[in-house]
Structures are given as structure tokens and as C-alpha cells.
Image 1: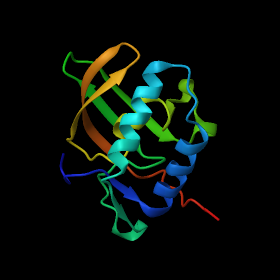
Image 2 (image 1 turned 90 degrees about the vertical axis):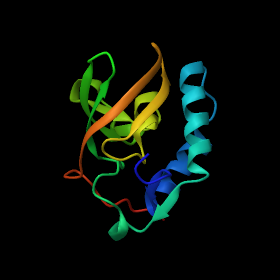
Image 3 (image 1 turned 90 degrees about the horizontal axis):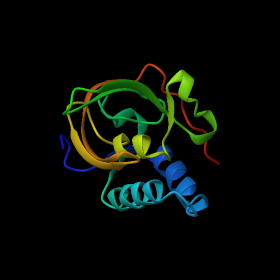
Length: 137
């Protein structure tokens, strides 16, 4: 892990904590395992102001490209649950793929549980061109 811990922007951290609190009753065991692991990783995350966030860290609305050891690769955007849309390659941060990468950086390798089983993935690229400021009251 490039930075030693997850790196999360302060307002995004608050939003994610709220979402995890409100959505803790999952019937899908893979999603439950994934979000439990993500919540545990958040406990030691480094929380930064927006202007201090490294450009290569996956955030809400980041567009990223990942690859697995078996040659599969995929480019998608990590979004809030209401914006999730598979045909537009927008993956909710509450799905295993979104939770797996949030807070990690370009070139980080991650072992995670997905619906098809455990996979090792590597983040090949991170683009912040779609970052929007979250307004959290």
C-alpha cells in the first residue's frame, strides 16, 4: 500500500460512515463481508482535507482502471449508491468492487472478496477529472 493506510477526504469519510451506518442490513453475504472489511480499514484511515488529497488516491467519483492477475481489466467510476449504473460503468462504493478500491492509490494491489470469489487486483490508473465537492450538512 503506497501510503500505508487508506487515504480518505474528510467530507467523503463522513458521507461513507453515514452510508455504512444506514445500510448495514445486507442479505448478500459477499457484500456484507466486503463492507465489514472496508469499515475495519476505515478505522485506521488517514483523513485529509480536500486540498491535501493526493491525485492518485481513489475517491468518490474517481475513474479508475484495475486489473487482476489472470489478465482481466476494467475501467469504471466509483460513485454514491444513487448514481450507480452498470451500463455507464458507474459502480457504487457500497458494492464489493467500489469498497475494495476506495482510499487506495495507483499501483496498490488489493486482495478482496467478490461475488465470484477472492481476487487480487491492482489499480493501474486513477483519474480525478470527475471529482465533485460533497456538500454535507
